[in-house]
Length: 116
Image (tube, rainbow, N blue to C red):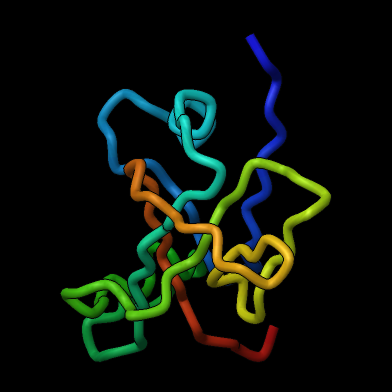
């Protein structure tokens, strides 16, 4: 079996997870036959439904858009030929888009900064 190194570019206010019961992010990537995968992204926003006093933003901000953002994120099987496009939304091979297929990953984006 060929060992693959995957890159998932995300930042501290984003959480990547598996939507496939019983499968982890690592499981899904290890089983993927694709060079790049698409990760649909849902944006969460502060609203009156926020949980007061909850310090974990993943639990504090339950409200999100019903549909994923038009800009998702991408994960890719490492290649020195690949470039991660601005915003980590696409993978390019010498400037040409590497198509990303959905394998059951998802991302939640909590775009809120507090005093900390």
